[in-house]
Length: 66
Image 1: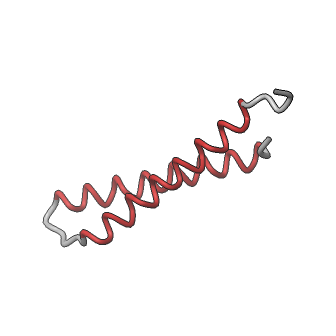
Image 2: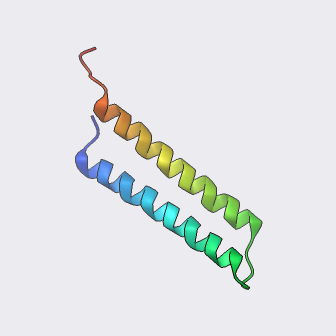
């Protein structure tokens, strides 16, 4: 079972990664130059953070006695 503080850190990490991606997407809609490589990297980080959080959350709901 993950530590509650570790779970909260994973939530914050996932939230931050998504926010950074959202901000970069907004920048891409404007007149400022953006990089497709940077967009892919931010997307990869956001997905990885969500997956780490989902895995940790699934471990909290699993019954270790089964």
